[in-house]
Length: 343
Image (tube, rainbow, N blue to C red):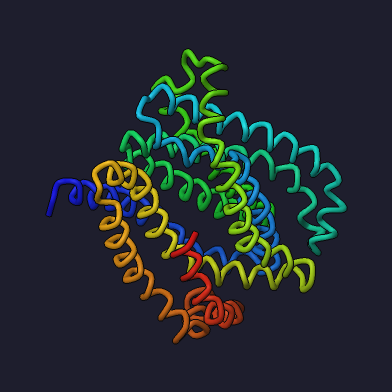
């Protein structure tokens, strides 16, 4: 095995290993949480996460995807600053748009969501800043630190949600907010210490904005379509069928998608860094082929389990009240597999 392939494998293992510990905590806590919180509470959480996730992914205008491309670190610094500045502006506009929170909550069929609507832009901003920092740390191959950030997010989320038992949706949403704070702190602070925002020249930021303008022009519409496809179902289900249905759908998606996303996101993060190097070395096609084949093999196992014995597994693990979520997982498994393979 060549040294670049060994380096790629070690990087993936660093992310998967760190993420696996965090997700193991989430999976261990979820059967407890499903017995502490109602499907309706999880439905409110699903709507909140859908709104915040959609906004956080689009807020940076996809400029963080360009962080690995410049040959000079100084240019990469400017791209990170550009992504963060765009996120601040977009989330600020969203905060104004979400002022009529009563109207928004009623439109989504979730009156209990009303107190948490103003939290959406803040949580989205924290995740957007964390994603920008993650792109920089990926460029510098600090994959273990990224794994720590992912782990801190999961631990903070679960800890607050367990502590908030009895508060219904408030405890679940507060956990997500705590996770966003932990994720941003662990990744943004080291990024700032590396001088990413030091001695930035506005003219340089404007130059890289023009140089990588294809990311908002081409990448943003593609990401928007993908995110709308992923986030629209809970929003539509809430408006049409109520928050309990959103809760079942959310648990079904989480139980199947989290193990898929753990591997797919880790592989994608490492692939994005090594692809630029492979392109310069003429080995991009081989790297892409080997990566895709390995990813398909990993994804097959949780999809098969959900399709064959989903309802029985959900009732056993999460409680009899959640057997319906297992029925949902059986239908969702093929779609979730495709969403992991083609993000």
